[in-house]
Image 1: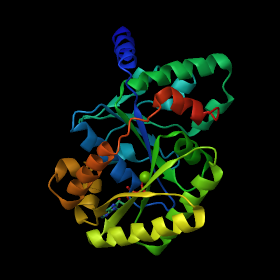
Image 2 (image 1 turned 120 degrees about the vertical axis):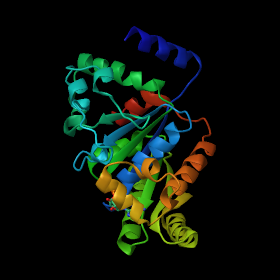
Image 3 (image 1 turned 60 degrees about the horizontal axis):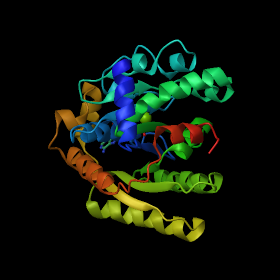
Length: 281
Ligand SMILES: Nc1ncnc2c1ncn2[C@@H]1O[C@H](COP(=O)(O)OP(=O)(O)O)[C@@H](O)[C@H]1O
Ligand SMILES: [Mg+2]
């Protein structure tokens, strides 16, 4: 505990700011959880301190993909029963994992003292280099709060017309509902059969978003459709670990490299994240 407080103070004095990324989509089943897990591990393999939060409260399955059974979740911190340190699960893949909680939206109703406890505990996450949040699909309130609070939002789609339409839909909601915030949105096309296909699909979405929403969205990359993904889900071991040279693993590493390069140092860190999450701005 004391060590961690010390570590935190050092980080703060270095001007260290944790980068916070939300992975979301319009349509479900497009690969958010698989990409979140494998991107998180790819980051850790570069020597970064990574925390992965399962924010998909309805269909939590990040833990299943890594074959871990978290004992606690954020709810116990919200209820002051546990410290943040106690609910963080270490994984064999070099990343730390936090299970979300269905009552997470309940923090909106906490009293001042409870909120203070939660905020203090939450600030412990500030010693990570990067926090990746796997959100649910669509426009549920808790999805939007994560999206609104994160520094950057990665919208995942596949080449399926329904996924493309829903990707546009979620981008529209983000830009129209969260007008007071300049949300940095990036597109990730999963399950493509060629680099060209990824580019073509991203361009289609980017153009429609520019035309109808007057919003600039960037393309961050694609991941090939490949049976190793399904095989790794069945084995409950991330593909970047079991098949590090597979096409999807190489794509994920490439994407992480691009995300790293796009770090413009404007992250506002965990305390700002929490403020925005609570809707205070
Ligand atoms: N790149 C891919 N290649 C092949 N299958 C994939 C790929 N990405 C995802 N899948 C399949 O889609 C399923 C759903 O992925 P998942 O990450 O759980 O989606 P989400 O979190 O968006 O609901 C996976 O179990 C896998 O079978
Ligand atoms: Mg998921």
